[in-house]
Length: 126
Image (cartoon, rainbow, N blue to C red; front, side, top):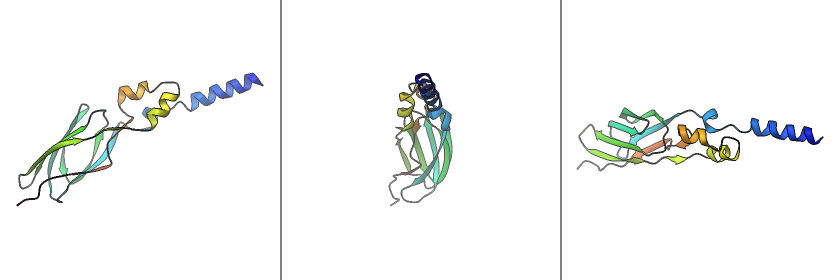
């Protein structure tokens, strides 16, 4: 009986040792808009890539442990720059408890999160 319990426990540990890299995509959708509702163009950048997007829009961004930098130019020429913060997803904690100790996710950054939508503050036109 002790051997069966040990085998069941081992099987459960292996089965439950999935990490974010197995259940989550490396890309995440981020909806970008401007606070005054205007349109524009935006360059989004992190250490994993650069994306040139129209605003407002939703773009798939490669997850990263660094912030998502934005450089916006509205159709009337106003500019805004800043960073959308990256946060740690909850699955990395579960991954660390099991077999891989979160190593896979730390390398791939798949455990990181950007907000699903972000409103870029921009000054209204005078």
